[in-house]
Image (cartoon, rainbow, N blue to C red; front, side, top):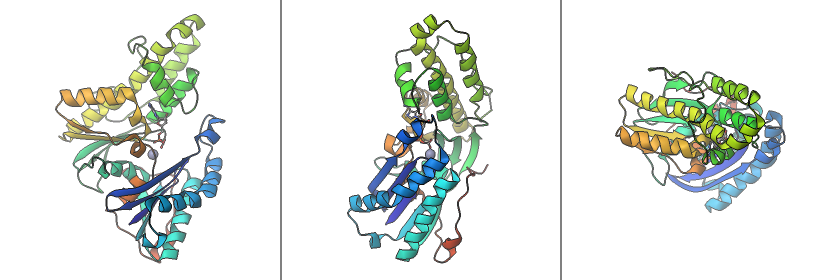
Length: 333
Ligand code: KG4
Ligand code: ZN
């Protein structure tokens, strides 16, 4: 029985996993507090985590219908993320583990996104290639077996979600913007403007989204406001298409480079309609199996952290008392 805790960014999350069954998964989003500033304010995030974390854990335990002392292992995100936000989760996890006298597992948030694919309703088994695209990260990894990750490509600048959010902002949409851009783009023609697809060279598995964002900025700066109003949806669809094309092309190229025929995805951007459509079409065309977890397991949650902790080594008491948090740290190449 694992209690998972996740506080790496702006969602305070706790979940209870029994074997591979999700007994509860509680997510308290802080988006409305950060929307005022157009992005996550780290210090505000840590303060909210501090206020919410105990209540969110209590709710996860209550929803699971178990007693706190039936928990046998605690899992917590230790990296990467906002350092103040991570420390709230780590300190909470240590205290509960110490109080219960159970072991603790520190989990890499990115491994958590991969491990979301092992959860019901459709658990998958490696080997697979996994694309993780969210507001904070964009990586593609090969997973030969649980707990093993080989980094094949990652963004050299902005994350895909960040690029979509910034594009949405330039188009006058709200924060975070990715979902609103998705809706607006549904009515547009993706071929209306040709925006550059970052690092679009054969064999190049890294991503870059700063160029497309700058291209949109200059395109809009020089545009007649009448055309902007008439073609906003077309511009949104064209911009989104450049970002999604990069994600799909590189994920398929990564799968080909490892001769792997199974693709999984994770991170908030996997909710995107065009990503799901294009990836499904291309996977079918190339004879690949595609697995997309339900949206609540794609965005940040603690069930994925508990899932990763099922096969990671645990630290016993008192070893975990020295466990810290690190802001950096993705997958090793
Ligand atoms: O995984 P997530 O909830 O949080 C982290 O960033 O870790 O991902 C949030 C990102 C935001 O950039 C948001 O705009 C994007 O996921 N997103 C979407 C959609 N829904 C959420 N991007 C494109 N299309 C969507 N439908
Ligand atoms: Zn994430």
